[in-house]
Image 1 (spheres, rainbow, N blue to C red):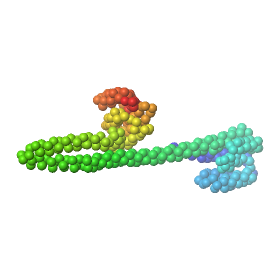
Image 2 (cartoon, rainbow, N blue to C red):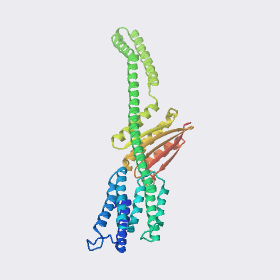
Image 3 (cartoon, one colour):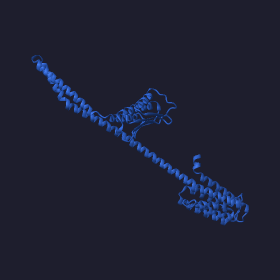
Length: 388
């Protein structure tokens, strides 16, 4: 109820002023003792006056229910009723004309506000109301209408635009969040596919390179078993051949593993994507953001970043009661900044348990610095030199 009154305060204020003006007009009309007044009721006010006044009030009140175009017709009707009152009953109802004039001006929102002060000419008209009363009434009406039509309405318009902008920004943010999650899922899938492809290539290479080698060695050993008693010298030579062949195979295995082994960067990225995916599956929105060329990060730093990220995310999931976690890596000039922050409850005092102590040790060992923020949620910020 209070909100409804606040939203429509201008209507209630105008209605109150209108009733006061009409009441003053009726009292003035009664005091003049006009000869035209009939004595049909005990109040001394004619039925005609009451009807015209009622029509005027009704027209001015009902018009608020319609569009501006329809309100113009109602306002015109109200001014006609006011003219009839003046012509039939005298000047006692002059003040109602000022109200009708302000109502007419308010139907043109683009009109310059200074037009409202033109009605001050009514101060010099001869009416039953005194000059101070006319001046105060017209100025009060002018200020009321100007305040509403040029200040309050503009403020409401801006508020509406701000609300629409806010809704648009929220919609854009939701779309970006969805796009980020989709990109995260795609990146995780791509990284996982790369690992699977590398494993498949490694398996195929091992099969192609070593399959015949090992099979040949097995056949030779079976032949050695047969020749061991009949021809020990030949059997010994064959055993030596198998040894040499297996040694060559081991060298090939080492070369293949060195060549086909995935880079630590790819494995670390895949693990970070997996970490985010696991948190999302548990109901905590988790994003991995990166800025700059992360291929510059040395393998040793990837170990620090990955271990500390696991520790920070694990703590957030256990204690923070958060709904969102962001892992962010930014490449700067010979430095890499990594932050893991959540929007949880945070804490007043940080106590270095084994987890946090371990994070500090890893960062110090890499020659970097670590900072913990607890004011809004909890944030772990690491700054690591890429020269290590």
